[in-house]
Structures are given as structure tokens and as C-alpha cells.
Amino acid sequence: MTEAPTFKSMKLRQSTYGHYVPCSHVALLANFAEHDNIGFDQLLRDLGLQNAAIGGSRAVIPAPKYTELLLAVDAHTSDRSFWFRFGRTLDFPAHGILGQAILCTPTLGDALETLAEFYPMISCGSALRSERKKGHLSLHILRLSPIEARESIIRSEILVSTLFHAIQQRLPDGGARLQLQFDYSRPAHHALYEIHLGQVCTFAADQSKLIIPADYLQVENLQANPVMYKMFQEECRLVVSLLESQNTLISQVKQLIAAVPDRYPHAAEVARQLGLSDRSLSRHLKNANTSFLRVLNQSKSRRAVQLLKTTAFSIDEIGFRVGYNNSANFRRAFVKWTGKTPSAVRASGKVLI
Image (cartoon, rainbow, N blue to C red; front, side, top):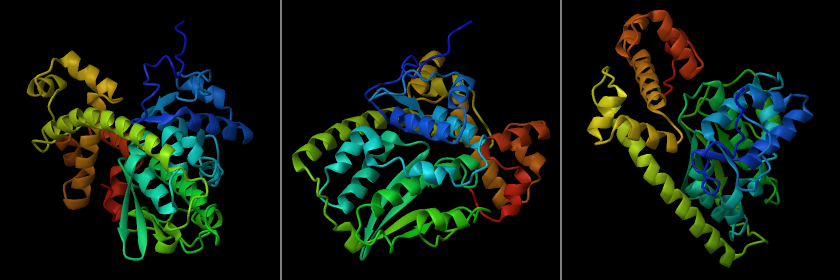
């Protein structure tokens, strides 16, 4: 029997994060899940992983595998407050080098802008963008997966809970004037948002975001260390630069797949257009922690959702346009991509892409 791989044996870059999540997050999740009587070791084994390397200070896990882990834990709890409570454990020190940089910043505003700038280092299907306007700073939360998908909501609840409590601890009034907006429909457990975030939250907004008043941004960090901040910041820039070089190829693959609507090329065709062999393209995508099939399915998912929301085509016709001759196979694939049926997306009245 082949031994299940440890995190360290999965050809991970131990000093580079991006497309990966620090194993400090996994270790905290393991402790948190076990406290709630969820058999975490078994979940790891079910995903072909072992617990041995979680404690490594610079160990990382691929972001898609981390998402699988989140969904596996979610399937074993009926407590909808679980992810809010877990998010509170992920304060800045859990974010590796980026966390160290944040802890050295002069003010809260600098901390949040640093987090947004280098968030790709620890992203799990999400991105942050900071925008300063007169009177406030907005932290926009951007996600790759469909808005209403369960995995997307889990990540939102974790991220917002993490940010809210990290900010709250640094403010004299506990963050009473923070504003929280979410781009998905009001969930059945919406009352828990106010309980765990201490705010009245807005749902079905144009975009998920936190709005932080200007005076909060000026709150000084008593542990500020300009010299160390500059050093950590430089290391973060190097990591992000490596990520961008990987993402360039992924962007090219996405563009070639989407070049002709409703016609989806094979991997060999895309490789030829990029001047690569099939094997080289596969290797490059694997090094970027993705695959041609994954990128292809993301493109099909976006196209299917677009057609469902903007045309009167039948579901069978839409399935055919994204490469499915069998409508049942299309429906199964669509649910796997988005967490919802094609009919539910069409009836929701909200664009998910």
C-alpha cells in the first residue's frame, strides 16, 4: 500500500506561500476541530494527507487542498458559528512572514494596506484590495469561486471574522463604527453574523467589503518596528514577484481557452499555441498548483453562469455550449463547480460571476 503523503512530501515550496496556505492555519484548524469533537486526523487521511508536518513553521498546503479540508470539516458540524469562531484564532501572527510584517507597521491603516498588498501570499481563493477614500478605507474581498457556493461563504466568514477581531483588539471602542457588507444573499443563520461580528451586516451588496473610518486608521501600533518592517516587506515583495511569474502562464491559458466562446480547446492545442510541449504545460501548471482541467472547468463554469443569467437558452442548450452532450452530466458538473443547480442559479436573480 502506498503511504499517504505528508504535507512536506507534496513538493511544496517551504519558503514560498502564494497558491498555498500556511500550515499554521491547518494546525489551528486541527486543534479547533478536535475541540468540537470532529475527528481531524481521519479527515486528513480521507484526503490523502498526514498530520506529521503541520507544526513546521514554514510548511504550507496547496490552497485547493485546504479548501477541500474546510468543506470536509464543514460537513461534520451543524454549528453555523464554527467558522466565525475559528476565524478569531487566525490573528496576524498566524500569517507567517506577512504576519510579522503587519505586526511591525506604524498604524492600523498601514497594517491593513500591507495585508491587502501581500494577501496573495496566503490566499485561499480570495483576494483583498484596499481603497482609501475621504473619511474611510474600504477592504474589498474578491473571490474566484461562485459567490453563493458554500466554500465561498465559509472563506468569507473566516476572513471577515479574522479581520474584524484583529481590528477590534486594536481600537479603544472595539470597532463599533466598522461597516460590514457581503455580496451573497442573507443566509439562514444571518443572526450569527451580528452576534459574532458585533455589527448589523448588509447582505446582497455589490461587493463584500469592510469599511474602516479614517480615525481608526491613525491608531498607532505600540509594537511598531520600522527597521524590521522594511526587511519583512522586502521578503514579501520577493514572494509576490515569484507568484506573478507563475500567474502569467495561467492568465495566458485562461485567455486561450476563452478566446472562442463555446469552443473549448484541448490541452495539446493550448500548449502548441504557447510554444510548449503537452508535458511542459502540465508541469508548469502543476508547479502553479493547478491543472489544465481545473482552469478549463473554471472557464466553463463562468460561461455557463453567464448564459443562465443573461439568455433564455434552455439548460440543455447551455450544457451543450460548454461541452456536454448529456444534460444529466452537465447538471452534475455544474453542481460540483458552483454548489447550486443550474435551475437555482437561473432563479436566484443575482449574477454569480
